[in-house]
Length: 490
Ligand code: AMP
Ligand code: ZN
Image (cartoon, rainbow, N blue to C red; front, side, top):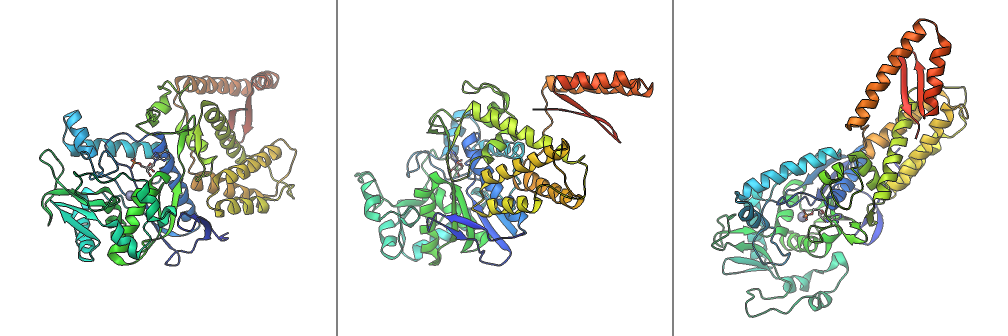
């Protein structure tokens, strides 16, 4: 069922029909992490949001080339052209090679992505692996006279560019307004214009990560890497470019400028931006000190956390807010999400043993339509989740004998629940690793064995009593043809 997908395009500030440049194929580029430290939960929100978008595009049958880069060079401490690069600074602090820093945090990032059940991208290019491409692109921009070199550093000339192309287009701002918001140049500044940014940065004596270039030893600026790698793998104009909203004003604005200057073409058809994860209303970030790490979240080992939360409970928490809305972290909300996730998973288990009738009391077709309508409306996961809870309600009602379902509708319901819960939302059943849960599983195995022996001796009164006593403490035993199963009623 492929009704029309619409996506909110930052460039036009409206929801637009999604029509890929080449029918059936989608090029998707997402700005990846800067691997000089662990990713915090805010970073994860952005990558989980794009995982949802990637998964739904795949579900609709598109062939997607998903490129998510690793920034392992060129990101300076300040987002202006100053300070050391983040890797050199961290390497000096930890007395390691910069590439040891890169390796350590790249591996850590991959572990976290796996924990959250994010699909790996099709290509994960690194900035250090594409120095030649970046140099070639800078040469092209210089030859078109939108960039100039001073003392081994190459700057992009924003004011010159703005004479032909609207520089502040992505955030809907005029150059004059942008200029007003930036500080005056001082005598020490080399660049000509206040908004000019570095494409290539000449190495200082102490710079550890450096490469030879036509302008001497140095390293590429952060923005050029995404322009060079996206065009290499997706072409000069591709379908979707994404990242967090905080990247719009500088990083993505500069990416557009670089690509336009180089190719005289707008590089991206749909710009998509995810909103921020906040804690008590403050954006989660390393500098704000409220950026707890996924590891801390899973163990509960952080002053802001009342307990540890499971990766799927957290993923489900994120799915209950639309990607363009801010999401505020709270223990209460996470605990509610954990319960909701458990309820949904329990209903999917129940689904396997439902009995069918001749007719259905609820319309499964309508449920399916509502699921697609939600996702086609700019990937509205919270509305999808509400529909899946309606699916869970139907399942439980049929199980309790309050409603009926036909065999054909049951097959359809199974497909809807599996497709949307596992493939699209990217949830997976979670076996708990806590020692208490393991002990409970062991105790229940023993009880079910004893009950089996009692039944074999035909003492049905005793086996029923055992079942009823467990029911009183919300543990439900079900006898199936493959033996007895148990579940906890939430
Ligand atoms: P960085 O490693 O800092 O380059 O960030 C990686 C990605 O995480 C970027 O797309 C950022 O926009 C995004 N990001 C950073 N902080 C947050 C936050 N608090 N909530 C959501 N996304 C964020
Ligand atoms: Zn980028």
